[in-house]
Length: 186
Image (tube, rainbow, N blue to C red; front, side, top):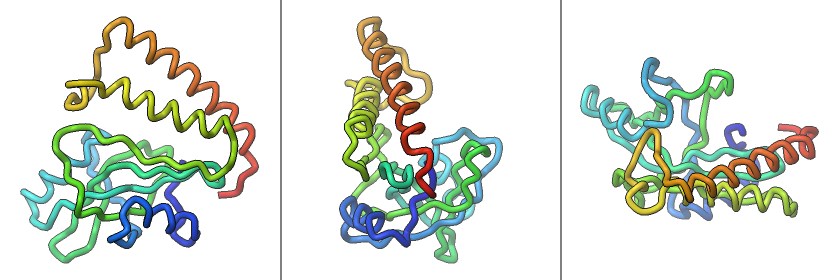
């Protein structure tokens, strides 16, 4: 996965489909080191309290070029000078310098998990199944009150078996997709 390319028409159409009232922006990444990955809502909230500015909710847009595109509910810091900054730490192996961010004034973080929005870019049953199982994985982890839980999640035995089957198939499909589309140019 990589930052979606704002120069591509299909990327702009996808962004418009998730939030028609907002233009996507390229946001520089400046991660706060020593903090947990994927805890942007709390991290940005603390940054606003300490330094001012605003917390902006919206969607970070990623793609597996030529295969699928995905929007992740996210938060960035709007600095007092008005510039957006993504302060969320990520795995350094991904070498992400900027993100494509779609501000969305209609959505707020209410302490519960929100699933990604996914769209295939190819007519491939394996890709479609992979995206379906990604949604299923989210649903298993966020059933009932778990939607408000963060960090490590404990699953009852029956759901753990369902989760393990889902993950096993996801990994198999991911390997198949990676091999099939390894020549897709980013």
